[in-house]
Image (cartoon, rainbow, N blue to C red; front, top):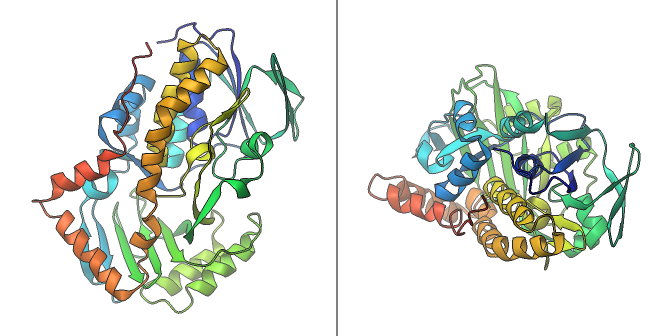
Length: 398
């Protein structure tokens, strides 16, 4: 259902991953004029699988009209198995434990939201914000390629390394907190013949997995997490990133040599530090941050769930304030801050949990998994994983 509370509001959103399209869809429902600018030439396909848990996520996705669409395109992921260096099972992790109530590839989710709003939202691909100049009545924006334009408000939804945040709030070194680990992901041949399952292997300070989320008999994904000091590399230098990974995993067993050979040919590498954004405020003037740009964690913090909840809240507060950004931004921060911090808190131990630093800690983690995956404790684990995801009381913005 579309209303007209925001028909006079002209909004620029930077970023078309998850938070940006989620906010664009919500704002379009209130009648706002929305432009989304994205530096990539098109929506990014594939990516890591993301999941939703609990009644808050479900309520927001139903309000957006995409709950059923997500279920149609869900991964239907089965068991994930922790193995030893010979490929023998150590622990089986049931799908409900790892994939929440529903799981979907990040790219598929972005596409669903894009398709829902593309007739009401302007998407500009292959461009980025270059400068922001704010006055009492709006924000003048220049772009790397496009013609300068003017907007009522600007939203930074451009991820952990947000350019919008840098322009409005200062360099990311003030806000990006490194957590001692790195993560990588890329496509590999499905040489294990996996079908919506995964295999996970760890040795001290390193984890590697092979996963198949979509049932493709030929194609799988590899994921890596490793402990490290802070590394110096250019985020655009893919060859350097591949060398870092290859050096770190050169002596690892199991299927690692085959995965590293696939890495040499991979054209979809994702590589970044496991880090969090910690910032005192989410808005300044007519610029506001949402999703990973404002309170992101690289992994383990339910970032996708937090992003869609935040999009629901920010759009709702703007509608409730009839476009008054000062009132809406203050209310948005008050509603979302504790919720976002709680999601971040769950992510703080993602690195040590996925890649424990010692053999002893690996065995302790596996024992914990065995207990939590038992039928007796399944309900306890579900409540634990939903605690942060449901720690917000949603207003009725209708």
